[in-house]
Length: 285
Length: 303
Image (cartoon, rainbow over all chains, first blue to last red):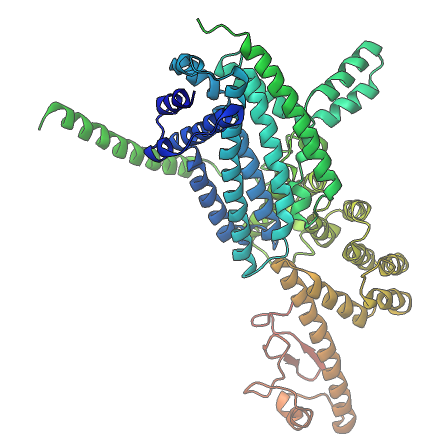
């Protein structure tokens, strides 16, 4: 099995260093190997090049925003930096996420993978974790970038720097959730449709509070049930929106962050389980 | 030169020449376009504040920043185009009909964003005082612990001559934990001498201390210069009266008062004229016991 997994790694162009490393046994080892490959593949696809754009954006903002903002440059740097972090992350989660499975099918490498003792669930979870690792690197580097930009505009340490990190954590959790959704759609649909559906879920997830209001204001019982159901079934992404309060130096309570993280873990588990269920019934012929 | 190379050079040249032509054509069409009518150039906002908030997804803070900067650009552009002298607290000649919806949208998107409320409190009273009060009260409702907003609301009432309301507002602001002691003092001052120059000076000095906006600071600085100049002119008039009592007539030139200025250490220019707070010499209305600002050189607001 070890040799087979090595072959699997080689099929995805691993480095010689990687080949010389001892391979772990068991399901976790296989998931870890797939996750590492997914991460390397994202690096090879130059996904992290978006960081260059992000740095340019923040540098320009830090230099020029002072003249345009009437003394509000610190707030605008945080809003801009964290919003760009979310937006870039959403694009990566959607466009890389929907291609994770599809590319393997398109290149027919999936046959080589599944000819080894790798479960379909392990494959999906590995791919998912690989993209999450890519997003983590992305988000951490961007968080450091925002902190440095704040230090630049404040000419030294800024008390707002520690307050942005809980918001960064919530953004990352939101991106993890979106990645799982993208993976779910890509397990049964084409990349274009998966991207569209994931984006719609992102939009609807931020409207979920309105769905609740809509449900309570409707006269028809059927419609009320429908929108209430939708409110509970769709991911409530407004739980992870803490950018605006962070710009005012407000941090979410530990309880809130914990509850949001737990909600995300439950949701991600459900989505990955559903994705595995669909994917394990899929015929690649 | 092979065909491939020739093709690359031709395409490269086409890109450069084409782009240059495009730039030149934009400049040409800009020159041909008739100037916009200042009365019709303001389009209404496409989105009302609540819709903008709803569709901003998780980016409401960033969209609020955009509306805020757009408000500043909107006012700045109108000020730039206006040919006359303007002060930030009297922009009524500019027809700023979009300012209220812009600031309203910014504050609906981010109700904790204090700067637009403060800007509204300073700029809007000369345009639409009711909207100025409404926006500042909206800010207080969303940020009940922001004592600075009470200071701004008090300022709006004070500008309207509603000293009782201004005093009440300062009093409510003074109750907030962390509010400075001078808020309570302002309450008392409004009750006893709301319209006095010392109250005005106190308000502007506090505003200067609190504001982070350079435009607001500049406006306040000019008001303080004006107040100083009014005090100085009152002092000079007293000197004229004393001189008239002694000499039986008003002074004809500043030289006649030179010993008094020297004794009182009042700065004068080479011609012996005392200097206003901006460093420009005052003008003596000979024989009338009156002094005025030199409108050609002074930086003190004339009205």
